[in-house]
Length: 601
Image (tube, one colour):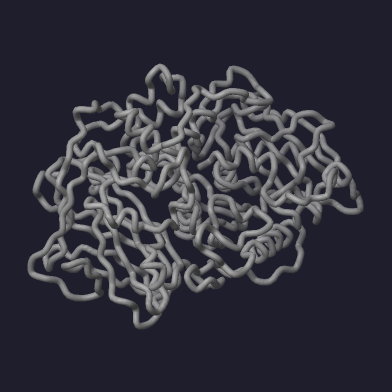
């Protein structure tokens, strides 16, 4: 969730082991309140190298998570996105975005961009422009070049600097950037609300701020949650989150989320992708294959720039990371996975080389269009295009008796299960108070044993299968209800450990949005509906002797809120609207359900 960067902004993950007082010994700090074109002032901390032997470029992060510590004599423990860059000397700039912490103005969730602004109109692009214009004129010893970076929510502000960018901006790195919160980032995936993360995040982030503050010292409410599954099941319908003991309509963003349950103008205005046109600065987009928050944001930001500014100097890095884990000094394993190497070493070389090249004219090795870590085989790969041109779509078809194959369909066939909102499928095994981000690689045998989860798998592979690129689910479904959720999982079944089922990729789709995110339509009970949707990319090798498995279910709780399985407005519905439904998954010649995998030839 975006919550990670609250802490990372203050103490970067790579700073452990840093020489005490390094920043104070090598940098001079200055604080300023920089005026914007509408008269509001944004708090900005400026750290300039004490080395005045040459002019230095700016490297800036704009954040809603505090640009502190506040006070000329109080220094950050480390600077920039990595030690190499801090020791290489830049003028590091941190800024509280409008309406957060010590900056003036009113905060907006993912401030909508404004094209062709006039007069005193502002958005994050203009605030960045006005900041840079002031810095160039008022900070001595700069070389006239600016780079920006940010992870998660600060990643959004990095992306938002790109449209109509100030000419001094030469290099920008949006890292796990929040990008489209209805289709695939923090708030919703394909219209399905991510309850667990947002309930926790908005409790602290949504605290009202009537005036600038150095610290948000409380949350909206206290909730002691030792078993999240039981807590949210007992809580009942989504509207109960506004009971007096919880948000109680004190959360502005929370009410906005619940008040916009379709892809209406609220969400569309906050989709930064539509503004990523005519981009001039070089771009390095970074994301993680195990990022449970903004994997979509990284992949779709890179894609949007490629499609709308095809000649931009745009690059993608995807590694085996959770949210922001590339900022750490080391990363050689995650959960049950051992990568056999510290994958962050190569990343930090690329990141520092990118900024040094564009901001200091330093020589750097040519950067591949896409640099991705291939899981399963555990190796870095470079591609001239993303997805790679020689990855071909192969449809793995659901078969009778739990089979999965690239050909063959019976004249008739379906499997079914009863989906009960009172007994939803948990997103992970065991008891957890908060979201366990290892669910994204977790063993799925706990789910496969349930009667409301269906599985299909190939025989043991006679040769490795490398899947690199965008996945697509294509499922023919019928329900006795008028709405349903469809969760599709791609799983690597190991030949040892009694068939460990490692989750490789999964996502949810709210079926009423099958034809339009803007205008939902009920399912017709008993009538087959095609639910086809894109899933995020992968780069994974299923080794010889392994099996490829597809699982399907209709709840993923409490990661995702429960679907009542009736066609209602979920944020306002009642407990009586929740109904059991029988879900049929068809797999015959007329309904070729399956998953399309981009197989590398």
